[in-house]
Length: 160
Image (cartoon, rainbow, N blue to C red; front, side):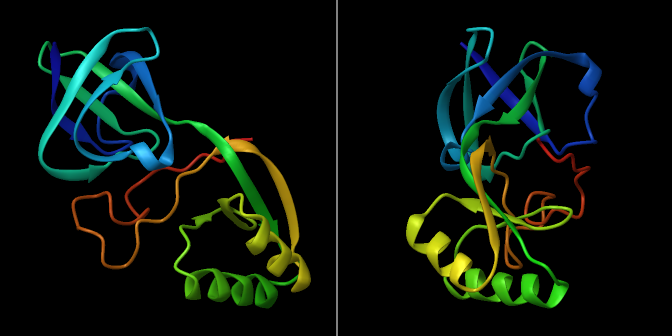
């Protein structure tokens, strides 16, 4: 079985060289060791010394030199919009206070669908749109500093 030799952050690997993609949901992108199946059906082994978070756009270099592009799978999510930046900041504070994973979008926030949280947000005046889309939340202020803890080193694309 092919094995992952290294992981490179989005923008730091030759994306045009990708031979295939592997589409993975949020819960399955934080791993140390797992057998994965690429979207073309080929399998490979991720076997790392410690767990890493795979982000949308990251590259996996296999032992045969092939590159695979990581794609965040579509999931049931909620996009959150507010009428003012202050209202959006207030919503972000409440989500953070609940320790929920949150993705920052250009004009709003994204969370996984949760009917209790949605009711709270709508009660606070937010506009919540439920749909299926990739979920790639922030890593957090205390995440490891290997390029996967924050979004600062990533080139972002909104998935609409």
